[in-house]
View 1 (cartoon, each protein chain N blue to C red):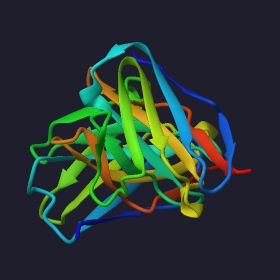
View 2 (tube, chains in turn green, brown):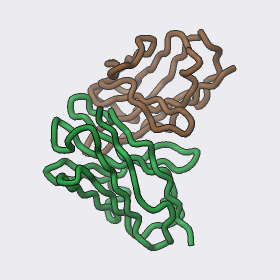
View 3 (tube, each protein chain N blue to C red):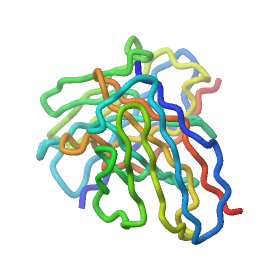
View 4 (tube, rainbow over the protein chains, first blue to last red):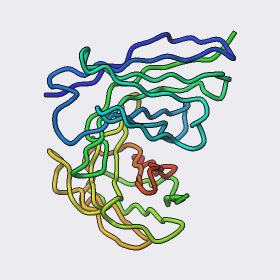
Length: 120
Length: 108
């Protein structure tokens, strides 16, 4: 079955760029009617959608983060990635990658999440 | 932008009880784009319901969703010990996914 796994630094300095990668295993990132998203959750708080990408490379971003976010895909590696620039302490959160399913318009598979702390 | 409000914030119930969770949208939305998730402490969310009322793969039938327009409900017919968690509703529209603030179902 398809599984997702986030990877990347757990600590990022203020004003720098947060970079995370999600590796898809158990299936091809290019198959099916899916899109690939990043979602984050500050400690003790709710969920915030960051953005999504299709394997065509087409992207959509949350307007509140759009100026700082880039999501990209590498189909040869079965991975997609997140870059969030000019980070502040407010970007400290658990970051999840998730598979979106066109057929149900929901996120049906999630990674376990990775904690990213923004601190000097 | 659609804003989702969930109530109550916390629901204190006993195993075997019926749980009724509410999700209200700031304006009418298509039920096709309303989903519910369960999140246990330290875990990723899990999709329960999509299209307001369809259960996701592997979800027990004690979970059901209903509603339309601005008011949606997640019902857990008989709480099992593993159902005590936080529940989020989620909407998709205008190229944006939004989540409600969540309802915590705790053991009374």
